Each structure stands twice: as structure tokens, then as C-alpha cells.
Image (tube, rainbow, N blue to C red; front, side, top):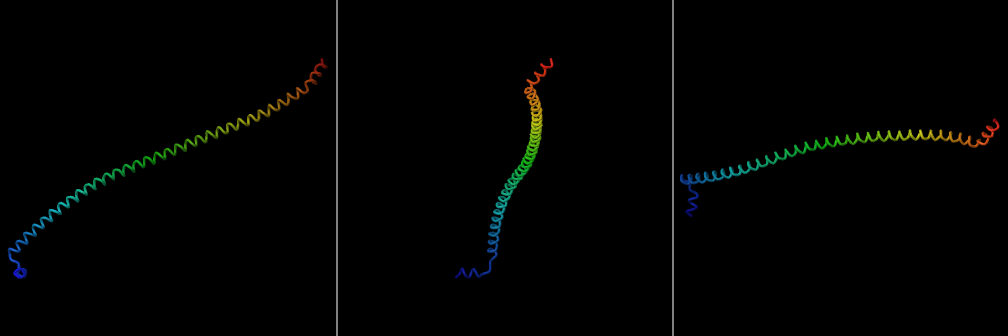
Length: 137
């Protein structure tokens, strides 16, 4: 019961000093823990900042490389289209040239046909012509 009575008694000056000392120690311990925790958070943030900076550089590099690739593809597409247009033009020119040659051969064939018909007539009338020539002498 002496303990119960003591608990009901007002705190003495010594009790207050002891509580004050104990609170100061606990506050100092909490302060030390907080400083340690803050230092760890700062270290983690510095590490994150470094990683973010590295990612920013990589994203910039990828963006630049993507733009270069897009430009190269655009140039490649233009080169292919130019080559196809040139090829088409050459192909059409060769086709037109072949068509013109074909028309010339057709004309020559008709002309030769006429010439051959003329020669055939001459050969068929050869006997008559010789007879006419011999009678004229």
C-alpha cells in the first residue's frame, strides 16, 4: 500500500528532474534516429536523382536516334521512289522503242511483200517476156 500512497503524492523536485533528464535522453535518441533516417532518405534521393538523370540522357539519346532513323527511312523511301520512277521511265521508253521497231518491221514486211509480189509476177511472166524480146529481134 505504500506504493499506492506514493503514486498519489505530488511529484517532488527530484522526480521532475529525473523525468526531465529521461525525456532529454529520449528526445536526443529520437533526434539521432531522425538524423540517421533523414541521411538515408537523402542518400536514396541522390541515388534516384542520378538514376533519373541517366534515364533522361537515355531518353534524349533514344529520341535523337529515333529522329535520325526516321530521317534515314524518309531518305531511303525517297531514293526508292526516285529509282522506281526512273525505272518506270526507262521501261516505258524501251517499250515505246520496241513498239516503234515493231511498226517499222511491219511496214518493211508489207513493202517486202509488195516487192516479192512484183517479182513473182515477173517470174510468172518470164516466158512471155522472153518470147516478146526474141520476137522483137
